[in-house]
Image (cartoon, rainbow, N blue to C red; front, top):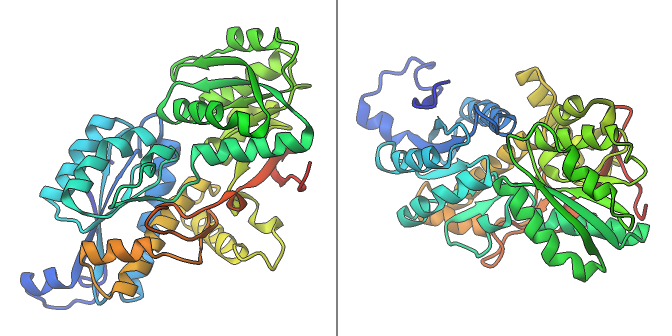
Length: 388
């Protein structure tokens, strides 16, 4: 899909063969906007998000729509470019007249769009990981993925069980990697963790052997944490194995929670741990887990439709759309202000990311229990037993 064109999904009215004039049609349709990184370096995020939104808008319209209206989804591809994202955000408001937005694949593109949506007073549910998307809280901005701060806290929580106190960071300089690095440094003291080595790499780096060699030379290092997303963490993982560092545990973030990371890292991924939503291990959850049915059903629907393995990133879009639709139903309205108020009241929503309970001071609504610690074994995701 061209980055300069909109994909519009308008269902049901034409299919039913109804003879409706334009004014009536306009009353029966509500527009939801989305700006995603469908192509470019963050396409592993945007592509499953795009496919998920298309699939579920189709399902919603086939079932009759929401609040008496069919959904028209207007999607733009920013290619991972923050400047393009802001341009498309303005177009969604001024030209397309959307009443809400579910999108923003990366922290950088989301942050670029926030001022546009805040000024327009239109609800924006971001699909990006950085904590700065919702901290400080902005009236019209929400998000579905766990924050980078939460990822640090979940990893450090597991360090306490393993009695790791001295760690190394090797972080991407992308928006997410830099933000998570800052959060890990900030929360480390609360978990008794000292960062004894701190290295970074750029988004175009194809080898990080030099940085890892420096870390290897610090004898005190008990574990390594890699904040980052995209191909960088796979390169880190391969170089880490090549340098024979596997005796020192490597922890990744939820920024790599898709099968493509395992494929890119290959055999080197064996033993890598990371915090992740339950979606990747839905079939391994106990039957009484409140998320099990949601994640198993979404995984089947996505894989049947997209013909590719499920990723947590598509799940973020599923939750964003579901939270928005739930708010529309409760408000029985498509008024942006009324729907915003209902999004903020979201409580007990069981999604792919966890159980969501939002409030005026929390526009994410997840706690650390929403993260599961996973380990890659035999080329697949496995739950790490509690306390290990």
